[in-house]
Amino acid sequence: WLVLLVSLAAGVLLGCSLKNFTLHVEKQECTHCLTINTTVCSGMCFTQDSNLQGVAGRKFRVQRACVYQSVAYRSAEVPGCPAHIDPLYIYPVAQRCRCSKCNTVTNECTKNTNVNANVQKI
Image (cartoon, one colour):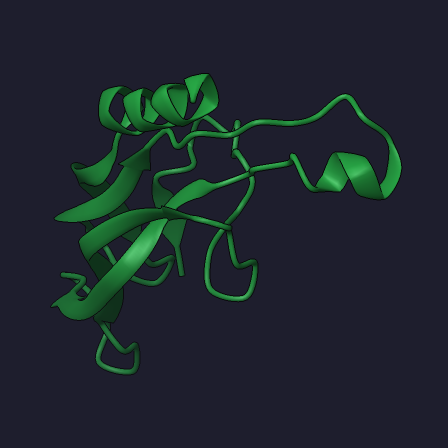
């Protein structure tokens, strides 16, 4: 029961929810950059790891990440692009989030320690 209560409390207190995020976009060929306000999934989810080795330990491992439950895509034009450069930039907008096992096919499942992680060059 204690583990269940801790799990529920962690989900409520830590939370996985929509957060506002500012994305700075630039294209090398364009004279201006673009600032986009969007939403992302952010927060912490309950995780537990067992100190048991082998198959027995895997039964007690719970590793979840805050991931998109639904996402839409929008576009914006980067200003100052020459005529031969496509100014269109497509970006995700999170609509709903959930705590779930991280799927490396559809999500970035690692922590990026790069200070300039919010700068997207295309």
